[in-house]
Image 1 (cartoon, rainbow, N blue to C red):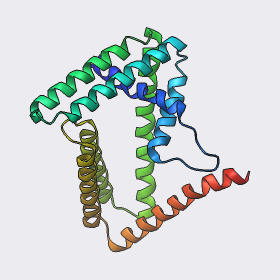
Image 2: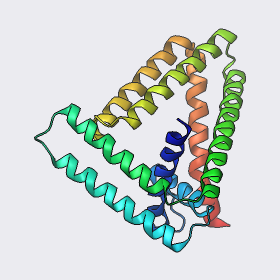
Image 3: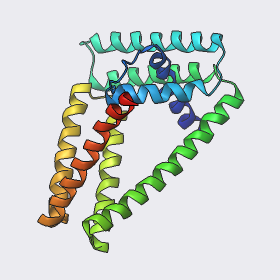
Length: 218
């Protein structure tokens, strides 16, 4: 199981090779997907890959993409067979890229994965406590919101990892999940708390929007 998880992390990082080739315009904040690629690219660079390893990753990555594109074009196949073939392609790709890294590099990935998980848990707890204070939540409300976030998070993860759905189908189902989450929030919070939540989100978005402007003026 540990090997499968490690391979999945390596697969994610393999795609980060492409991020190093994407230029970013000065003063312009890239979309979320590009920021994630950039972050993965930075993490990827910390492994001190050799030029040979980088070339191998790129080759394997391109091969994987071509195989998946060909599979998507195949209309004469059942959903069950499509899922099986897609899973085989992914397994072969994971095995290939896993074999490119050294034992030390794999250990570094595993360590960063654990650290990232711990950091995420800490941030989630701090955010929950902050929201509890700002919105004046009761213990019951706080527990319900935490349970709701966990449930939505698990469903989102399941959707992202699904091999039987197209990207468009995933987007639609994610929209539905977000819609259900909003409805759930309405049943948990009071009108006043919902208003405060909206104001808090607006202020946060405004702050994030101003960060690139501030960097540009410095």
